[in-house]
Amino acid sequence: MFSELAGIAAAQRGLYPVLPGPELRAAAREAIGVLDLAAADVRVERTWTDGDLHGEELSWSVGFGPRTRAYLLKPRDADGPLPGVVALHCHAGMKWVGKEKIADGPGEPSPEVRRLRDGIYGGRAFANALARRGFVVLAHDVFVWGSRRFPLETAEGPPGAARRGDAPGEPLSDTAGNAQPAPLRDAGGNVQAPLSEADRYDLLAREHEHVVAKHCAALGTSFTGVVAGEDLAAAAYLRSRPDVGAVGCAGLSGGGLRAALLGAFDPDVRAVVVAAMASSYRDMLGGHVERHTWMLWPPGLPRLGDYPDLIAARAPGPLMVQYAMRDELFPEAGMLRAHAIIGERYRDAPESYAAVFAEVPHSFDVPMQERAFDWLAAHLKV
Image (tube, rainbow, N blue to C red; front, side, top):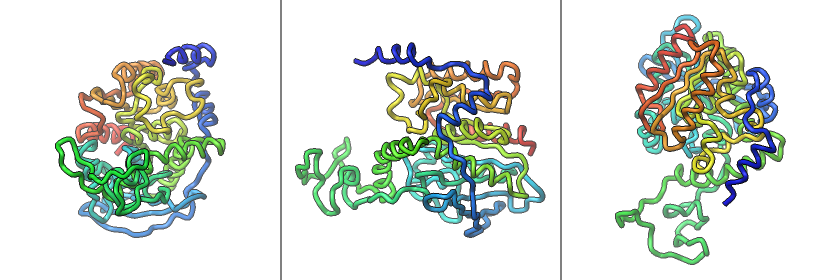
């Protein structure tokens, strides 16, 4: 109905120009409203060992909201500085936890985390696997996830109750407020089990992200800018540690977006892995916008370049992009255009851009992880 809008906007707003990398990084940082934050008052909350790994739970303040919690993992018998990696958790519509999606602490992962890992991480905590390869790995919660989440109400009740506002013990209401005494059933006619507290929270948080994005815009920043600011603070902390040498970063999906932003805005990040999170904006229009987080749509970026331009703005710094070619969240044409845009920006340093095309759905499975670990080891000199 409104398809002509794309052409009018392109003609009047000058979308997707090609700016030099340094100019694009500076302009994008300003347009997105990336905050200058620092990890202050860092505390070691507890330590543990897990076989050949040493773990620390850290906390710090970025100046607002609850203290950030993070896991730091490294080989138990490490001798001297090791390369560091900021492991960036995904979005996945799961905000009840953050770092736990990709990193094991001293306790067992929750059923919700196991379910997610089985679906997109090959069933394992990739941060722990990476640490066992000889890295110091930092996995931290970021704005609105885990320790940084908002205290939303999560009423008891049947599936969908938290989303619709039904009181505990009351019949599930329809959208008009009329009672529906019958329980919800799945496609096979079976009564659905009540959702866990974590799943109820995540239903609410999905809608609350719109509110967060609006507040950030009203404050002259963006959801993307706040998240990127917290990730920059985490990377700076990791580099400050005496047991850490060169630092890289890696993430899947929303974590891949965070990795792209960190690589663009922090020149001291040595190597970047973006997994299953690269597509041109223009090819996502008309079918692939709705399912993505507000983090992917920061204000003003299309007038400075396409999203792959920002991913590659760090050129000639080492970059690996893993394309999940059966990814339901991105069109194949968009991924191929992203590869072409990034390749052009690395034309003078083709050895620094590693493109991996995996015939998998949206995921960072074990073979993809192992390939990324090998590449990080080569570029961070393990």
